[in-house]
Image 1 (cartoon, rainbow, N blue to C red):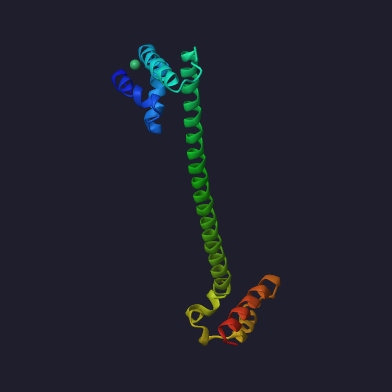
Image 2: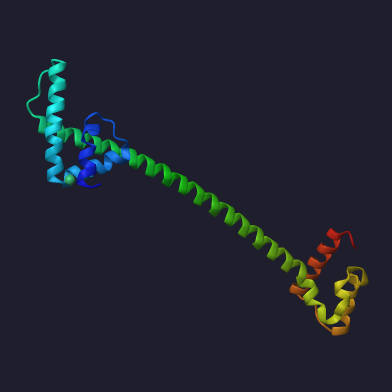
Length: 179
Ligand SMILES: [Zn+2]
């Protein structure tokens, strides 16, 4: 706000008619500009003094102090209004961010579970792939007794991990209704 703008708003300021955004700029200007402050001081003394005469109030002798107090109070009010607005915005942003994180971690869990489950269900296929070949792609073309044959032909000893794979195979078969 320049001096011309500030001085054109002096009357509106004294009558408390400035909207908050203009009021903030106005106070900033008169606090840093000696000329405009003096101009404001003159008008303020005149108008507030006449008003006090009209209303036969006790006429205050220290108008400058009254003006400074008025400027101070308005600035404090504006700062509070701004702080409340800012904190409302911050709370809103925080809520949105928290919501996004919640959605994101939920989605990650789903992807992770899906990956784990699909890995788990594919493991037996990979494990026996060499032996069964393309038949593995079709559940109806081999059964669990084939796995016994696998161990016989390969002369392999069943250990815990192969039992585990077989259990998974069995589990998958049960849940597909193929046994
Ligand atoms: Zn000025």
